[in-house]
Length: 211
Image 1: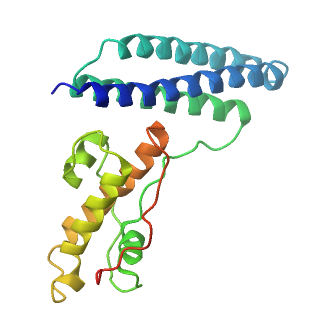
Image 2: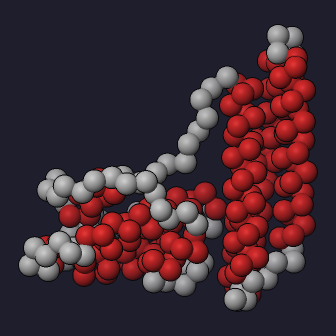
């Protein structure tokens, strides 16, 4: 599926910002490695140095491919590569600074549902995240790929109101669909924030089924 010009420019801008940020952080990591590893962890330093050089090489390749990608599948493939490189950088930076690796924030669906309903009722069990890419998340939300956070939020409000048990005489049969939609919504909030495609804007007020 081809990108419209506007969507492509938005995607490219977000990717370029992420690439630039990661390149800067990689250079900082190299400087830190020289200062903290050369004396006591020299063997580890050479391994980390090689790994960070590979990160920079990958960023250059991704940036070059970014200039020629024009369809949705190519964009998703390129973004997946960038996410992999971001994770690799974090692995090396964690070793340099001797800190635990950062983990991508996973949504607690039970907490999200409680927040959406404005109450603590309900007994949903948490399950591992199943929304792993933006294309799936946009599809679940029923909005066009590349839509803004404002559009995603509007879709979330509408669908949550339709699916919530309080809007269906207490019928909880739609809870699996609601949980998956909440997961997709949280994924896209983080995705759009990380992609720098637009500032992260939460809803104007907490969702209430009575709206």
